Length: 333
Image (cartoon, rainbow, N blue to C red; front, side, top):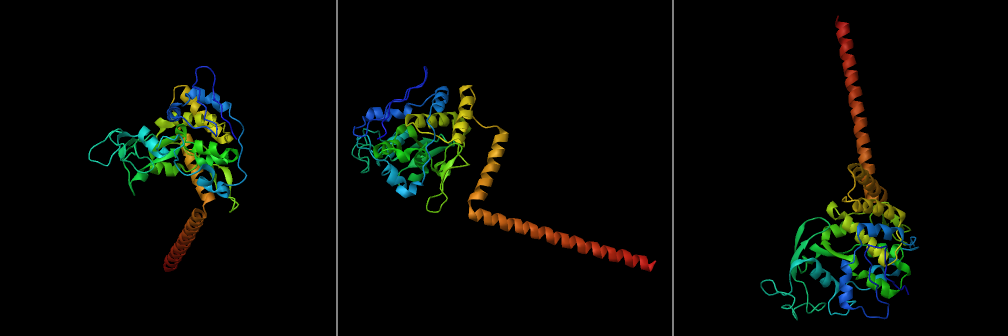
């Protein structure tokens, strides 16, 4: 069993509360407050330098049942308060939350007993999300075809956790990590899908079955809204520190660069040159990793080549016609 101890950085930084042992219940109040226990930029830098070495998984998580096999059913009520994790995070992160299907906005107290089975007394039926990742405002409405507009993101994704150490944790620890408010944010659904299982500079990709498993491909993800970059980096490191998770060196370097700028009063955003480089690298990664894109590229190159050949033939034919006309004019003289 992986037993947690409080992670305490040097003076002036925030101490992260201990996660309860496998056999113990998690007090609801203590558990819910974990979402606020994010290190400062300076504290996150110190924590980053104290993380253990990366412990990459030898096989992909599909070998052990993927999300459910390693981290349990989605959004379990780990603190035993009668409400699933998704609704708890929605209640925390949305404004104007409505806890009843009745007309008008009903408070949490007014919504008692009117919720879904997963959270009978506090189901969030609607509300407004001010999305930290994109800066957009999203009207949330619970229901088929609408709920996915707002998704709950694991800041440190589950497949990423697995790939860099969670494969060795006990079942209870993985369940807690999957439902930890410190590691969860309500965000724009499309942004969450674009992030996938990526860290700031790498993503676990592929599978053992197809002999394509890599714990760290050379692409990563940051929130599109640069104003959230510092907060994102600090929360990412806070989760890693709380669970003693080792990170790939590329992610450590990316986080250090951002947090150093944040600690100095900057916004952690990359320069224009870095953006251009990242865009070019991302395009190259897609071409290398996707057979479809490689095929499209080959076809495109072939078409360009064919176009150049055709153009050369036309130019050569035009040159021959010009030569003949000149010779004919010379003969007439």
